Length: 177
Image (cartoon, rainbow, N blue to C red):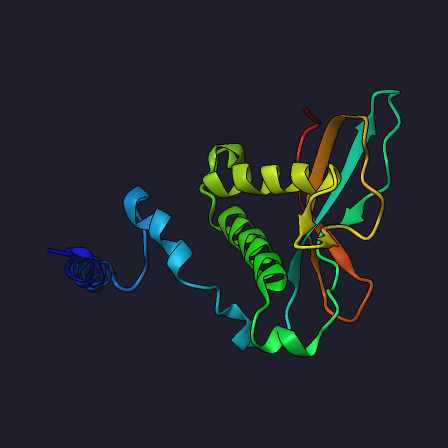
């Protein structure tokens, strides 16, 4: 007998009961992990600052590259209306950066963001991007990846769409590879 539908119904029932008891906010470590099932719907609130991920790498010679945006726009093709895994993966990665920005804003005083799962996942994403990672056949960055990487760093910047204005939300320490 397949218990999958029963477990899904039980999960959502538990979630509804918990939300009703807590006044609509999801808190707690076990509920935190299930937010991956739900996209970030904050884009309906209007045009606001958007978190963007930038990375840079250090070569074995000690030279740092320039900061590079990790989310370039991918070209649209007619077949993308039916099957579009590369763009879906890119949007999932951007959603992860959005969640990290929310975690930074919701971080209690005295808590280290590096202990959060979202920070660790974005750190891995930044490492993958600077080392030449791809979404399907498209590179994650418009710039050339560093092949002899010894360390990397990433930043989350809040940017206003359509303008050059931004402010630094988070800068990671130098992370050895």
